[in-house]
Amino acid sequence: MAESEKFINDVKRSVESGVRPIGLGFFPVVDPEDGTPIAYRSEIVILSTIKGEKYYTRVSDSAECGKELFEYAINRLAGILRDLKSRGKDVKFVSVRCPAELVEKIDFYETLKRLTGKQSKETRGKMCIEFPSSLLDRNQDKANTAILDIKAVGLKTAIRNCGNDDFAIAKLAKITPDIVYTDPSVSVWATDRNKPHLFKAFTSFLGCFGTEVIVEAEEKYRKLMRGADCVGFISTTGESVSLKTILDRRDEAV
Image 1 (cartoon, helix red, strand yellow):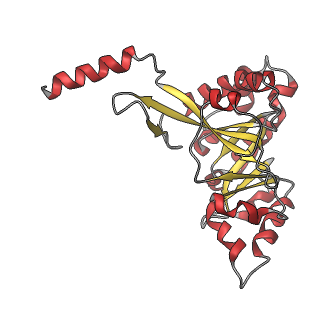
Image 2 (spheres, one colour):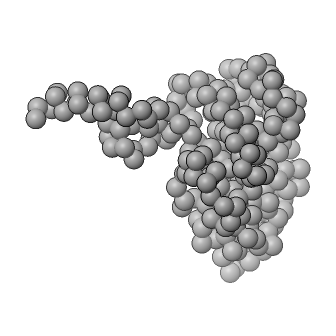
Image 3 (cartoon, helix red, strand yellow):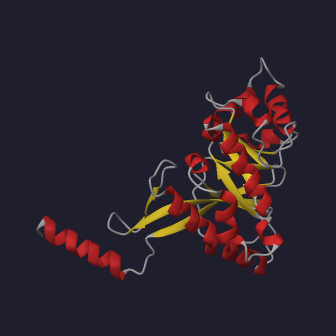
């Protein structure tokens, strides 16, 4: 079969498959003690049957279409939270990723009022906007304004990768999210025999800024998080799951 003919057939198969070109995948945030899901991080995935029905491409935070993808995810949140509640799954939040550069490009208060204004206070309180740690390197006034505006609308805020080599921890004193995710690289401190208390001291220090701490690390580190000053754990070694999988799953350790 000629390459051009194969391509046409692949495109036709993709169109006829009924697969939506964009979707959300979910990663569970679990209780460090018993492993039960307490929240979910969502990520945009691009679905393509042209490269195989199980082919996924994660969209980078620097993508030019970041604003459109961010709004797509926000628009999905209310329905996701409604579906979770209907199945008796009480979660602290479901987060969506947001490029740090948007704090200098959009008015978060007006944008989120437009996108979530019709939702109840309870629903908005379980929506979370998650930024990369590079947010702290942006214009400080604009970044702080964005965080405050998001909170004013009633949504939660989060920053991930806290503790990586470029993390300016002192800036958390001015830009304070509701939640911080530790960077996976710092989890090795939990097994450092020369500094046995360093990891727990770090999570406690982050908590001093008035944030809740979620540890992001390989699954093998989860049992070491017991006793650390954190409210949740998210594994870097797991694969994202669909909303249907979450709804069909019993609320047991994952």
